[in-house]
Length: 554
Image (tube, rainbow, N blue to C red; front, side):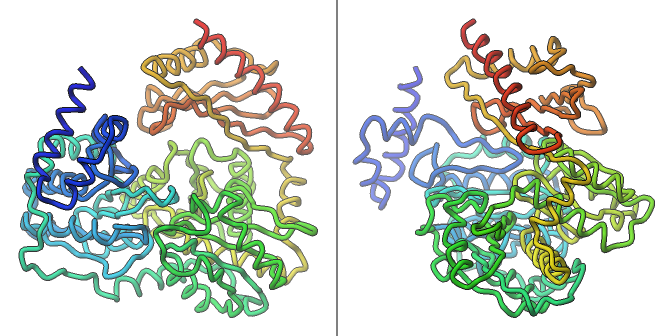
């Protein structure tokens, strides 16, 4: 039946695209290519849609983009918004076809009578979060696949407060998308002039970033190597750093200009050594001690710092704790000020915040939940109490001008922090070790267990149930507190997540991935030194592997 359904979809596309440039590509497909291209429809969720570019219902292409946008337009039309609210702003990154897809989305919206603003150049995703609010739009769209490989693209949606859309809104939009045929949409421009976003919006964004500055001392003395990884960060990051007084920013030439093929690394993810390697080589040649890299849509940032004779990439947890400590030690903390992090982010950050008198708000995984919490503060006219927020996947934010992670402001704060410690004769590694000496070493790792096939989801649920209802010890350590987020606790939405707190001051989080057939397990382990923490981790991983193996055998 499945093969018949795939074949039916394929024949429909062949029929509809006869006489077009896509027909030859479809007609050359073998059986496996047909299956890969038509075995499913890309689902639409809170992260929008994302996938490999190509022809078919399971790929990202102009028909999938147009269908998603028509569903979005129908959702807005059914909301019966007054004319002043029926507005959308669209941005895009430097990936192949991103500008083309952005213009198709704009055409579809304009053909539905929806006022549409389009950025005239590839800019960071946070610029759309900012523009939604500044232009008082109902929604924002970004064509991006973040740090995925070059063959990917995607479609992300923001609501009027600048946050990624909620689960409820995503479900309602997806219901509308599923009613739309792939070939029932007019994607032509029909003579409409594109309403490009005024440059003053970008200028206001830059000024909002600069207002988050902590310290401007000694910036001119700092030598920094920066790579935009062929993405959107070149213009805003270099502009902000220059305005903040950083005159010695050395660009990685091979990764400087926009290039959707990302020729120097298969995956333009600044967390990975391959993406950072060229920058590290530049730093060695230029005798710089700091390497900074942002991902293609410039919402994530990672750094490498000189560590003795080599360079070390700091994890997002390490970098986030450094930034949190730096910010707190340089601003006046008020009694109602808050720090925000996701529940899978290091527990060490909460200890640092507590030490400075900050209340910590833990959110579900995903920076949109931090954005939602900022929105709740705004409703109480208390958004100024937000001091800093970060997540373990390289997302950082200071300020409330956007409601998503922003690598431009993070880059500014990182460089200011680096300059401040350099002026004191300290390196970032010195400061990190100082933090560990004060609070204890904290090892943060993530392990994934893959469950393929039709029974994969059932097996993950079995493990989650075992952890939720039966586990009292883990790797020889007693569970002293168990937080089950499934019913909805701590004012958070319901989520299939369990966090165990152990009697060795460590915690373990179990969470099925929302995008892959994987069970993700996060460890936050405290100890006197790294080797002690690693020994504890090995014991707990052995226990965990035994549990997963026993479930797989049943």
